[in-house]
Image (cartoon, rainbow, N blue to C red; front, top):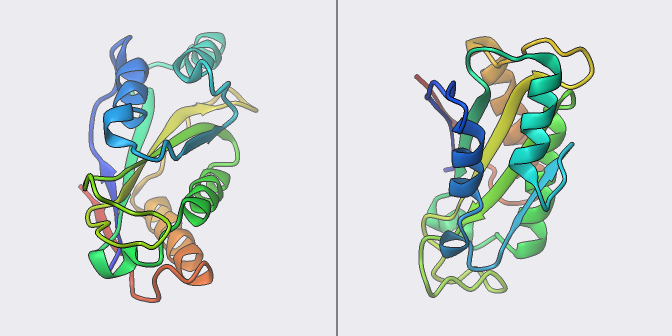
Amino acid sequence: MAILKKVMGRYQNTDAIDNLVRNILNPEKMKHMIYGGKGVYLDNIAGSIELAQQMFCVEGCRAEHYVLSFADHEAINLTVKNLMMLGYSVCDYFDDRQVVFGCHEAKDACDMDTGSNCGNVHIHFLASTCNIHTGKKSVLNYDKFHTFCFYTEALLEKMNISSERLIAIFH
């Protein structure tokens, strides 16, 4: 069964966004270069987020980091196309924030066309805490995180990736 985890971090320092983006888009972890985003220039993701945060003077936690991971039996249903669709659909949940995602494929022999040998496939999401429409800080508290989990669980079922309950980790 899929797991959606909120990765707890302070993400307050000036290079937090850049460090997260570099980790999420690390080409050594992305054999098929499955990545995208919303509200950002894909050729300068960290700079796009930094610019909006500078305009609105966001202080404190500057980003939220989530990881959606899949069990081996779910990886059979994963293709490049549906991972891209899933990534962008999850980004849509954060309709008022800038978001980037990157899919990490842990096994070297992962075949995304057939789904064979694709254990530990997971998608990282970075969501800026800056509401790009109002300039106010926006974060998912415990209740909102569970709403996000239900949304994600429905996407997984709709896309025939998983019909099992999603495990939510928020701590």
